[in-house]
Amino acid sequence: MRKWMRPHMHRRVTQHVTSCLSTTMANLVRSAKSGSNWTTAELLAFNVEVQTVGAATFFNTPELPAPTVSETILHNLDRPDGPLSKDDRHFFQYLKEAEGANSEDSSAVDDFTAFLLRMLDYDNDGRVIRMQKELSFYMAGQHVDAIPDVCLTNDHDYFLLVQGDKCTADNPEPQLIAESVAAFYQNHLRCVHAGLPLPQSQVILGITMVGTAPFFYRTTISESLLNALVTASYPTDKTVVFKFIPPVPNQMSYTIDGMRPLCNRRVVFQCLEAFKRFIN
Image 1 (cartoon, rainbow, N blue to C red):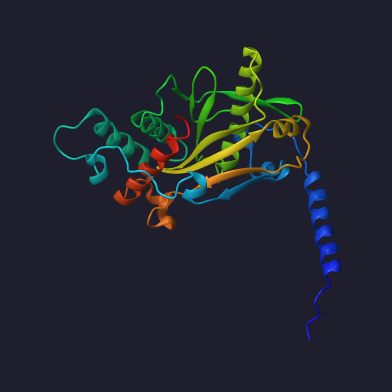
Image 2 (image 1 turned 90 degrees about the horizontal axis):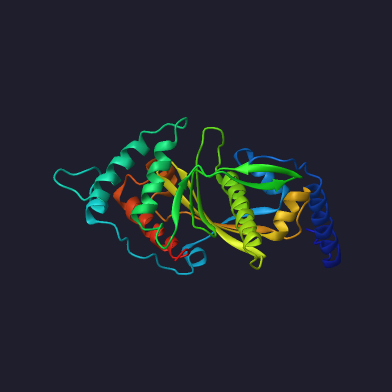
């Protein structure tokens, strides 16, 4: 007969496991690293967790909006014959070049991503799109850099960062999160210089690109996380990163297919429309 653990014994075991885990995390080595060198080890060391969520949680709505791009883009695998608008012509050209890019030269993917943001008017209302903008923050007492492939900014804030999948890392998420930390730090500095109230936290938007397949992120960076990074200490408050994977029909092949299948293309443009609402 199976012997069940008494409730008070179960609580002791749970508390012991939690205590051991906290001690292990607190004892992890934390050294200064540039954003390009962040891995999942840094996420564990600073109590950062990525949670994949659905549209209702991520976008605050269960339904994605209709895409606003042309029917030409939505209904043609490749560039059709005949005259095209500038946006349509550029879409097919950038898509073709991004699909042909290798891991050692990701500039075509960066160009494709920047084009998508411009085509969808992410850069309205005084916002501009920058490529390879060098940001920085403090980690373990040292000044380190973080350079997103693409970023959206204005005179006051960094809103959105894009990190592509590079040959030096299997997972671009840690790099994107490091860049989100740097964006919040820079936004913080701007408030200091302008004599404005300092935000205690801020949601930084992010996209990782695996080929032509975007994944979407919302990272809440707090002042307590900045302090933990500066002092190389384990923060008691967890930083939660919401991740959203576009609900394409075949998610197993999404990173390979990207925006090539028309069904994927429509869903991605729906996601980009929904994501834009966070900056308007």
